[in-house]
Figure (cartoon, rainbow, N blue to C red):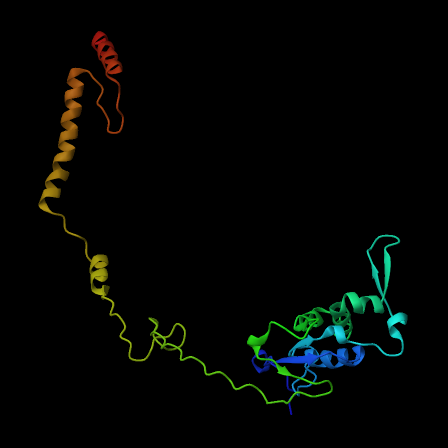
Length: 254
């Protein structure tokens, strides 16, 4: 059998009102701390906050036994040398009864962030009135164990919208879905073989150009020899001044 671990959806927070009029401080603190921690529930876990909210009213009516009003002392240090302050509980209970109850209950909770979260569920008031009527708290007597109603009913989940069909066909990655048509590639094998095996025929216009090209080149050379100027080659462009000087020199030599 697996060990049960409480989940956030399994925790249901309830509200209780505890009357502190005439109650002993230690007995009241132990009972309230038990409810804040959630020890009254069968789903209790020491690493989770499974407790309920507690409202303590009539904190001014709290009492101590065995003459602890004069014996018990509350200490506070400011953090500086000589900053220790001592206050008897008789003075605290007359001036700050809320602080007395909160101090006793927080002393029975874990001293970590979990204990601080539990302490935030505690509300203490001097008189019989409290501003939490909207939560509809139920009265709870000291020593009474709240009834366990079981795990809360799971909330119905909202229906998820239908997923849109993905563009990628269903199937393995890289594999095509069954029934998907594959694009047919054009066959160019016959054209390639014909281009390699046979030589391309030239058009009659290209043939005439190829024949007239050497004839034009020889005509240009003969004209340059008669005039005495050097034939111009393709790709070399001479300046007009240099060409004139060379023409004069060849004319003088001749």
